[in-house]
Length: 68
Image 1 (tube, one colour):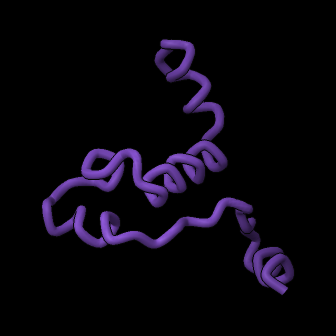
Image 2 (image 1 turned 30 degrees about the vertical axis):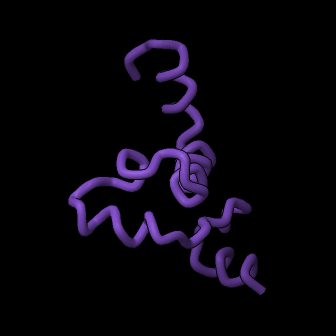
């Protein structure tokens, strides 16, 4: 069902799911992004995985030390 709706909207659904966590709720209150506030929490790692899914060419460029 999700795939059908995504197709109708002209978008895609990622396999990566983002976990909920207390750190994810606390980070904005501390005016920090989650990956800085709690980089090892499951939700932060999940967000990084989503970024890798959405922008693999950017991740690859950064890993190679090149400007994109």
